[in-house]
Structures are given as C-alpha cells and as structure tokens.
Amino acid sequence: MAKPFFLSSFLAVLLLSLSPLSSESAPERRLGSSKRAPRFFGKFSHPHTNKLSNPRNPKYRYDTRYFDQRLDHFSFADLPNFPQRYLINTEHWVGPARMGPIFFYCGNEGDIEWFADNSGFVWEIAPRFGAMVVFPEHRYYGESMPYGSRDEAYRNATSLAHLTTEQALADFAVLITNLKRNLSAETCPVVLFGGSYGGMLAAWMRLKYPHIAIGALASSAPVLQFEDIVPPETFYDIVSNDFRRESTSCFNTIKESWDIVEAEGQKKNGLVELTKTFGLCRKLERSKDLSDWLDSAYSYLAMANYPYPTEFLMPLPGNPIKEVCRKIDSCPDGTSVLERVFEGVTVYYNYTGEVDCFELDDDPHGMDGWNWQACSEMVMPMSSSRDSSMFPEYNFSYSLFDEGCWNDYRVKSRPTWITTEFGGHIFGSNIIFSNGLLDPWSGGSVLGNISKSIIALVAEKGAHHIDLRAATVNDPDWVMEQRAAEVKVIEGWIKDYYQEKKAVFDM
Image (cartoon, rainbow, N blue to C red):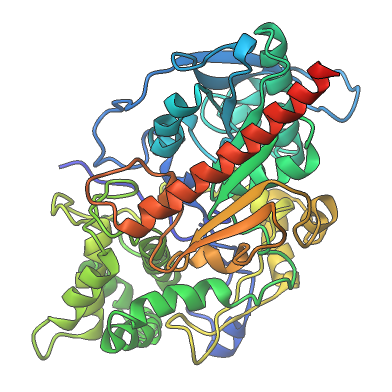
C-alpha cells in the first residue's frame, strides 16, 4: 500500500515549519510564538504530493506553452531568463476583430495544471463570453523554475531573492502584453481570476496594472491579513467556530488534546506510544511534529468544508467537519482523548481507509517556496486566544518569527512591505471579493462593499473559493446564486469597456 506524504500546517499563507519552539517547552514559552500562517492550498498542487490521487487526467483542454521571462523586471542586471509555463485555450475565443475577452487566472503557489483542473468556473463561463482562457504559472513553482532546476532555484536566499509578489505580477503583465501583441489583440479586454493567494494576486494586479486588466474576481483572498488590520487570532477562531458549530463536545475534546499530546511526549517512551496511537510510519522525534500534523488537518478541514464530497485535497465526504465530530463523539465510553482525536483526523488523512501509516512531513528541510514567501514579505501574524479557540494559546512574536526565518533562510522579514506596496486597505475599482464564512481565510478578506465597483459577495456556508470550483449537480442554491452574481458583474465590466471603445471609435 502506498504511503501518502503530508506537510505539517502552514497558508496556508496559503500554509509547515510552524515554530522553532518545541511542544516540550514550558507552557509559558508557547505564549510567544514564531508560528507562520497555515499555507494555502498550494501545498497540494505538487503532482506527487497526494499519493492517493490518480495520475493526472485533465478535465479541460489547453495547449502548454513557455514564455521567456526576465528574472528581475526591476533592474538592468545581466541575469538569466527562465521559462514561464502557461496553459492556453482559444477554442471559444471570438478573436481580436470582435474584441474577444481574455480570462487570465493568476497562478498560485504551485503546479499550474492543478489550479487549472480545479478552477472549473473559469472554463465553464468562457464560451458564454467568447473568451480565451490563460493559466500562467507562478515563478519558482511547477515547471517555471529559474536557474534551470528547483534545487538551484531554492538553493539559498540569493537564488530565492526574486520569488516575490511584485516579480510575479510583473511576469503576468509582461506575458499578457506579449500575448496581445502577438495575437493582434491589443484591444481585447482582460479579466483576472484567482483563488486564495491567486486571488490576492488578482486583486493586487488590478490595483498595480489597471491599464492591463479591466477587473478582477478575487475569491477567498485574505488581502487584509497583514500587520494589525485584522485581529491575529481571526484565522484560528474561525476554524474553531467551524468545529464548535457542529459539536461542543468535539470542540472540547480537540481543545483538551494538545496538553495531553505534550504531556505524553515528555514521558518515558511517550513518543513511542504517540507514534503507535496515531499510526505513524516513523517514530516521533518530538511531540510538536504531531501537534503540527493535527493543526494542519483541522485548518484544511475548515478550508475544504464543502457541502458535497470532493477529492480536491484529499478524498473527503460532504461537510467533513460534521463527519470528524461524529467520529470523535461516537467513540465508546472509555475511549481516550487521543484515540478520539485520531478517529477524527482519519476522516481527513485516511477517509478511503487505504493508508497503512502516516508520514508527517514531505518537505523536512522547509525549502518550499511558500515558506520563503511567508518569511520574506508575506508575513501574516497568527495568534490563538485562550477562550474562543480550540488551539493552544499563543501570541505572535515578530522577534521569534524573525529568528526562525533567519535560521531557515538567512533572511530578515519585511512585515510592513505588503501594505506599503499594495496598501493596507482596498481602493481602486472593478474588483469582486467573494468569500465563504466557513473559510478561515475569510476573516482576512473584504466582507463588505467598498464602493459601487469594489463589491463583496459573501456566502454564509461557503468554504475556500468554492465559487471557482466546477459546477456540480450537488451545488446548493447559494453557490449558484453567487456564481450568477459574479457573471453579471463581469458582463457589466465588459459591456462598459465595449461602450468606451465604441465611443472612441465614433469620435
């Protein structure tokens, strides 16, 4: 039986090398934390991450192409270019003569084919608009590696220095400009799409390059999850509320489990017993690794708490948190807290029952791209409160965070750079922020209209960018209504653009 590999928890971003502090530390030390934000869904976008998945079977047709990108758009240094992969489909495009729109998905922190296959909304509405569809890959992810290979690109802080949001947005801007020029499509309007980190990029690109795109749909985009714009405990409070709304006893069992894991890990042979209880493939070296693994499951369950079965991250039932809590609460009397917790997390890590044992980490050196981004500029403070959270209490510490990032990458974080570069609050025009309130990242997004053209669409029972997923026969009415509202707004953007162009031509 194949053994799946899993990363410990971030977002995460987007998502895990959470803290250099050990769970074996005294409880008071946990109150100051270097914990990095849970990663987004990009951790699952590597083609070899989920060993339960079948070999890739693309749902949508596209050509795979490569564009020669500059490594540094903001200097004239003589640096090597790199091939940026992008996926393109023109079968429904009405062409430049009719100013057919271009739907451009801002690639996330992972393999672009995975995002393309899981963003059915973009593909499904393209025929209605006569649109071209383009999915560009984010630099330093998938096949879009500078320096010839992932090993070279991820070698150290110098080779990773150009893995930034600014460079990625410039890649997108240059690619769009080049495509339009080569296709004689300079007058064709561009609409941006993105979910999670990609949604943040879509919104920021609309702000930074308003002349290139006429609007952006930013789904589940936590653009406010920086500095002190939202309370740092917001993310974990929402995860906790998702569990508490299903079962108070389930919530309390999970809340109680952290101290038991820590105490067990300090006993003689305690790590051996934890290894057995949780069916791990290798002996635990420290209880923190197990806590991170559990933290990761709960966070991703909240993000993927869809109303119907999915295999987006793992094979999961509909309303998976409900199923987790059912498993925890239905254990026979006398079942220990840790045994109950294990029964619950198997819904996430082994719902099919095909896993023999669990690996806690498939990136033991922490050299994945998102951890670098989280350490350099995507600094999203996370805390956990004593009363409202089911997670251990801790307060975010910038000094401990910086210490961990320096140890990992020899980089000093810039926690105020994102708000300096893109603004701490949203401005501009023609942006849709869509969110589901079950999604823990919704707390860092825009949940109310900013203006007539920067609007928020909020679904009370929605999870992480559910609106971007392909339509299914199991979609509840509120998902269909949310997508219909998005289509109507996009139609308005394109109609206004055509009218403006017509007015110019008529002059």
